[in-house]
Amino acid sequence: MLSYSLEIIGVYIGLNLLINLFLAYRVSANRVRSNVMTGTGDDSGLYNANRAHVTNGEYTPIILIGLIALHLLSGSIYVIHAVGLLLTVGRILHAMGLSSAATKSTPPRLIGTVMTWAAQLVAAVGCLYYALL
Image 1 (cartoon, rainbow, N blue to C red):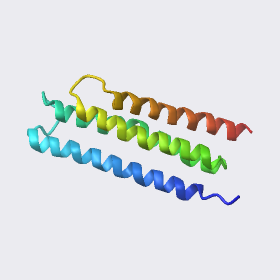
Image 2 (image 1 turned 30 degrees about the horizontal axis):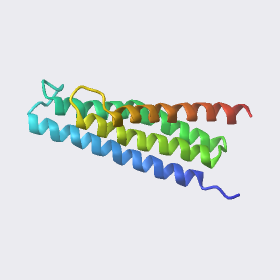
Image 3 (image 1 turned 180 degrees about the vertical axis):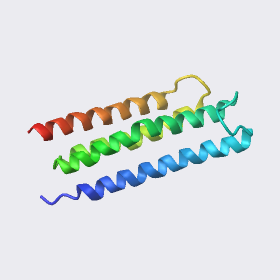
C-alpha cells in the first residue's frame, strides 16, 4: 500500500503553523487595543489571547516532532492521522474556549485540552510501539 505520510504530516504542520500565526496576531491585536506592550496588565482579553498562544507553543512543537518520528518509524497512516487531527482540532477548540470566557473553564477549552493530551499520548505510545516492534 502506497503511503503519503510525509505529505500528510506537512498538511498538519502547515495547519498548526497557521493556527500559531493566528494566535500570535490575536495577542498583538489585543496589545495594541489595550496599549499593554509587555505582560498582560489587567486586560482579560489580552490575558486569554496570550494564554492561548503560549499554551499552543508549549504543546504543538513536541507533538509535531512525534508526527515526524512516526513517519520515520514507518508508523501507520491511521495513527498519524489520529495524532494530527487530535492536535489540530484540540488546539482550535482550546483557543476558542479561552476566547469566550475570562477566567472560567469552558467546554471547548476542556475538550481541546483533552484532545491535545490524547494526541501526545497516541504519538508517544505509537513511537514506542513502532520503535520496539
